Image 1 (tube, rainbow, N blue to C red):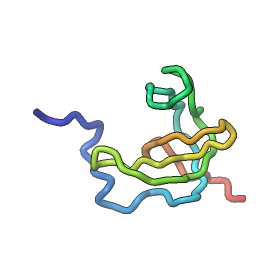
Image 2: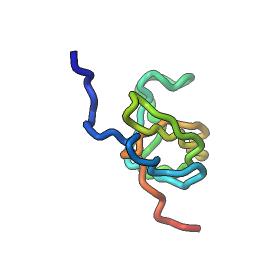
Image 3: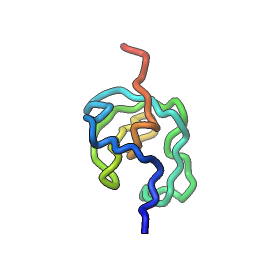
Image 4: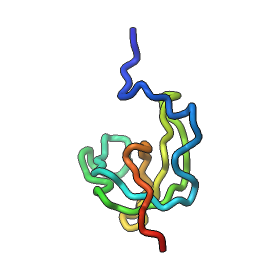
Length: 92
């Protein structure tokens, strides 16, 4: 039986794309898939363009980095893949 993966790329072969404390921007809307407590399945957790800061870096399926991003204006931390994030181009 082959494991179903959404990419053949193994991100863990390279260092993480983002660093702790780095300001990032969401590239897409993210809905609760049932893993975010206290919110209904399907609720929008993050909107495209929302700004947050990387608070943790973990792994998933021994293939992807998962970045815990604090979307402070929304009041919660959401785990996201690197491809779902961009560096925030606005430097303050």
